[in-house]
Structures are given as structure tokens and as C-alpha cells.
Image 1: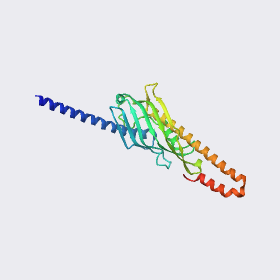
Image 2: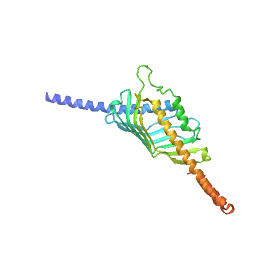
Image 3: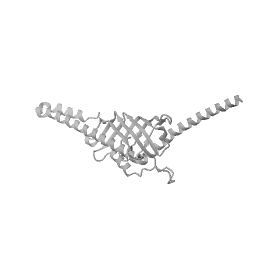
Image 4: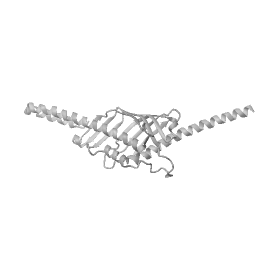
Length: 254
């Protein structure tokens, strides 16, 4: 009798472990699928990730190799890419109507700005999000289940780089540092925000900070040009060759 009870206990432990493994693997698959379906539905560009590693028990995890594509008509292969996104969420909220995310942390992303200050790939993606319905086209249309909502305590981007591919630089490419981003308490004062509202807030902030980086790069470029041309005004005959070389160095590709 004792042996039977022991065997039953072992079987229950094995079944419990198997159940937990299924939950863990299913959760990661669900998150990956949702990102790669809702992302394009909102942005109208390709969104891919390498893998998701998220614990349903601690709420800690990461999304690796996130790549956001570019709208039609833009040549760069991506608008945003990062090796890893760290996430901390409240496990008990995973299967509730409102997912509570304590922190989303993105380190050293690479953003590509293509176009000009009024018409560019990032502003086009933002327009796409604003014009989207905000619903997953592949989701079942039962009409009974409430739309998932989100609360985000902190959304942080540090150490980002902006690749500048703009006519404002005479068709040449350059790079600039992305100012850090730190958004707090998204959806805190409500029942949370929808995926569309969350994406729009994040896209607006990224676009704004990228434009700051572009303006700073153009200002620095103008200063270099002004300083270089000063040499020519001092002694045109003597400094013309030096000034020409310096201007070429300023506008050459980095």
C-alpha cells in the first residue's frame, strides 16, 4: 500500500512538472505569435523576433532579436532593431484582461532614419499605427471577449544609435546618438491602454527623440562647415585646397 502511494506521488510530481513545462513553452510561443501578428497589423511593416524567454512564475524574461521593417518606398532593411528586450511583468496578470508590465528595458537599439524632417520612415510608421483599427485580424471574432489592455510602469531605451540616411545630409549617411527615453506609468490612471494606444505612445516618443538626434547632427554639421569656410575667407588663395579637402571629409560617409 505504501509502495502504491509512493508511486502515485511520483506520478503526480512528473505530471506537474510536465504541466509546468507545457505552460512555459506555450506562453513563449503565444507571446512570439502575438508580437509577430499584432505588430504588422498596427505598423503595416514586418515585425519579427528571434525567440521569447519568459517565466510565468517570476514574470521576468526577454525577447531577442526584435526587428521592425520599413514601409514601402524606403530602402533601408529595417527601421528598428535590437538584440534583446528585457521584460518584467506581474505573472498573475498574464491571463487577465489587463496585463501589468513593471518594466520594458531596451539597451543599445539601432534605429534607421530615412527621409527628411517632414516625411520619413518613422513618421510613416506612426501614421500607420494611428490609422490602424488596433485589432488582430487573425483573432476569432466572437464579439464577447474584451480587448486586452496594458499597464506599463517603465519603458526605457538607453544607448541607442540612429543611422541617418537623409537628403538633408546631401545624400550621405551618418550616425547620431539617440537621446535616452524613459516613459513612466503608461495606462496607470485608467483600466490600461490598448495595444494600439501603447504602440502609438512609444512610437511618438521614439520619433520625437530621433528628430532631436537628427537636428543635433545637422547643427553640428553646419558648425563644422562654418568653421571650415572661415579658413577660406582668411586667405582664399592659400587655403582653398585645404578648405575643399576639409569639406569633403565632413560630407564623406562614416
